[in-house]
Image (cartoon, rainbow, N blue to C red; front, side):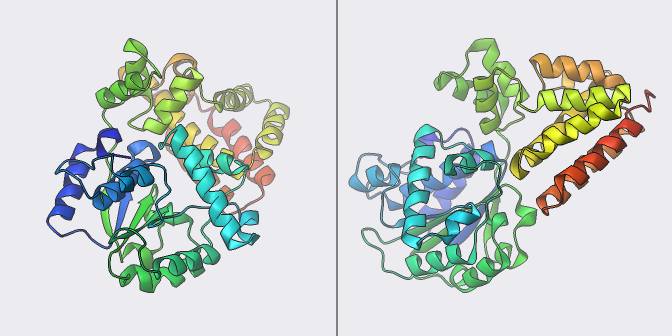
Length: 379
């Protein structure tokens, strides 16, 4: 992966190159931003740039043996730590590492812009929530205390440190603060506020802004995912997240959660509790990760509805059926209940993430919807 393969983020690329060329590269950094902001490909490009023996001021050469191994995620001095499904953590450490690298190579070959749920699907179970366990941190320490094999540096790319258990973080504190010479930690976070303070305080943080719409539109056209006006509409709808842009372009703009939101609001508006209980039964079977994605999607759509309610449809990002639905339901989302709806989704997401009973949680949420949605007062 070269810097030229990373979509946008020109200021961050320039900053990282400048730090390295001036000898100011921190031994532990954290790139924070949305899933589709490009943190993962940027980390790969940075590691390849630092390792390349024929780099220019702008990029790695892409042709030397080191670059070719880095591009294939096959370099012995390039290490990864990713959230894994719990049952995989009980396997032999060598097997866990090999399986993770195989899945990662397949994912990057497909696209280096991927979400957490897509990663779990790659592992074989998108319904469960992964984690970084103490066993994973032990493998990190063992790998990094070995001497480098081919280059003066060793890299540890740690994706989603917010998924790290407390025991795992405690094992890493010493090596993150005082790593072996030539060792670099690159942490990639989507929710930096959830990273344990003991880890966050030991890394230099860099924020990755959302990608601009013209940049996303060009990237979609270059990859053959969308062309012309369609690419511009997708770039607007994804809200600066290229992972979301890929999904919209591939699925035609309609989220898999749209039907679930329509069913919830139909039941709430009609005040039909049997329909709401059917909805609860369907949603409770999804699994925790899809449930969390669904709630985040609901929150985005409520924002669209409220914008239409205020007569500000030109500020909405949705397209196609999502836009039609948001406009149709907008009279029911107004100043008296929009804050409550967003708080309810946030609270429900928190409870689901804490392994609460989904049937009880979503039953409570559905009943509250039936009460608040019927406050049909436009402000």
